[in-house]
Amino acid sequence: MSSFSFDVVSDYDKAEMNNVFMAAEREIATRYDFKGSPAAVEWLGDKGGFKIVGANQWQCDAILDIIRKKLAGRDQSSKVLDLSKEPVESNLKTTWEVPFKQGLSQDNAKSITKLIKENAPKAKAQIQGDAVRVTSASKDELQKVISLLKEADFDFPLQFINYR
Image: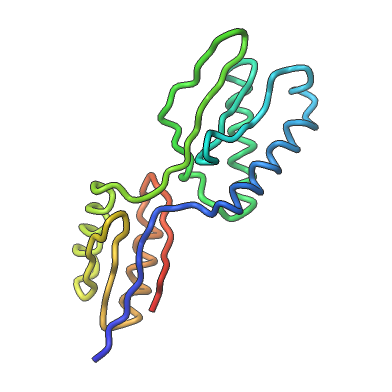
């Protein structure tokens, strides 16, 4: 009897994030309401997030909306944006560091395995580092688990990889 499996991870597509960054940059440059203001989007250190710069909080929120629209247009989840840091106001401008969420924390991995155990008894979920491996004898059962996880409203993005 063979068994099938896939991994649940929380990551983002670096190439798509680059596309989102460039598209947001272009839109900010052409928007009339941003003319003559410090409005910009920049990379954080190792391209692990965006740094949003605006004249005030309202402008930063407007830029965040642009980024969210660009993410949606490229079929990426805006849950990848970690909005937990507070915007910093100084020298008549506001900067907001928005890192990308990457990897499943132990708590997030536990909530995923708990959900699978409660709703799909034929599938086995096992935490492996910052991923969760789901195995089952039935491919249908794995499809059920994937749609269950897609419906669950986690505050972090999920991808399903290594389906075999």
